[in-house]
Length: 74
View 1: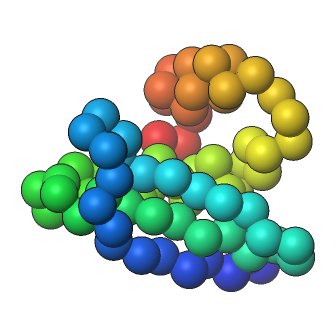
View 2: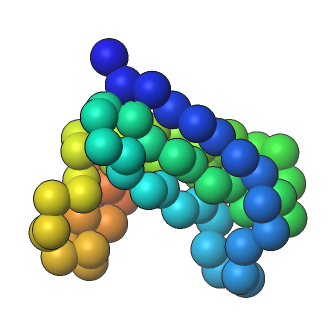
């Protein structure tokens, strides 16, 4: 089981969410507070899928995002 800590913060334009992994199956998700409600939900789901897949092991971010947007649980 993973623990998620979710915050709404103002992020730079074009950034919907950010995720930082913790030490033990926990992640902090930052959702852009400037997004409309549906986009916030979409950003949250996208971030959770990255957490579930543990996409933080040093892979190329472009490959991770391409896979995330190719219909894998997103």
